[in-house]
Image (tube, rainbow, N blue to C red):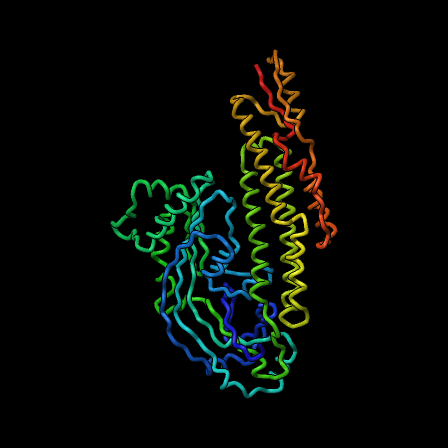
Length: 460
């Protein structure tokens, strides 16, 4: 790979021509250049590449987001592993839906303006100091081309929905948002939407991630329309306000045989395994947030505590995966370690408490508990729910109360074996440990009744 030219998405990073780059970590090396600005300027050629387009996406996966920003598999691995700190429009990559039962539609505006290229052939004559800088091993590549432009993402989220509404609402949202590029609010021309579309647009919020300097950030559909119409002007008449969107890298090995090089890239299969693991944990997080947002869960502290603990442990485990990727990826690229050292992390997950099937079964059981409790609460409309013994005592000993009828949910005591297993796994960090759930599975997943340990109180 020593002689391979590379191109990578800029992702809001401050690239300049002649800058050094470490492709092992996908890291810019600030403060070091092989040539001074005068030499660089004399060796730069520029061409105009005007282009703009828009894309509407209903997907919120890492795969779809990466596609919108033209991120290849290797760079995606670095992003997922936390090696890259993104900026500008690329901060969109970090924005995730909070709830699974929520529709999200994203409108992307993308543009290119000009391309600048550094003629390395004119710069091959190098001093001993320049060669020493290359030999020190800080970098593997030098930036020799930059495509300028800008991206903007308008992220529209619906309010939390019922399962049966999701698909219809998302389809309707896409239909409305696809109209934005053709809408105008200049002069007396208004936004032409049907009454149904007008009602729908008032039910979703808007977030903006872009490479543009705006006077105000759009938060509504109307704001988004107004902002979208201004974006081409904000780039400047000659693209002077554009930023790097794609960067072309030349291996230092072509300039100095003793330069550090990337010996091996991350395979597509390993990137797929990493993406699958992180995506499954993201799905679990959204489902858990759905339950935590339920009014019944808010009224029953033990359920809320168990779900919160479950979510926290999943987040910790995800962080551990990303730390392993952050540590191993540079070594793999440098040829110091084999991919198997990282593959073990994903293979051993299937033997751990964080196996996706086990996580989903536990969460499904909690969701069933919530539904059973909800049905009980619904049949006792108007009955007060008390959360602990202290509040119960206040109600019982109130001077105005003569008779009390109390219903107590006591099907399961406080504490959860599976949560303990998850916690123990993280503490020992033994990814090869096999967790046995046979007795627990029989008692947990075959249980038909609601649980809680909370009090429902009926008062005269």
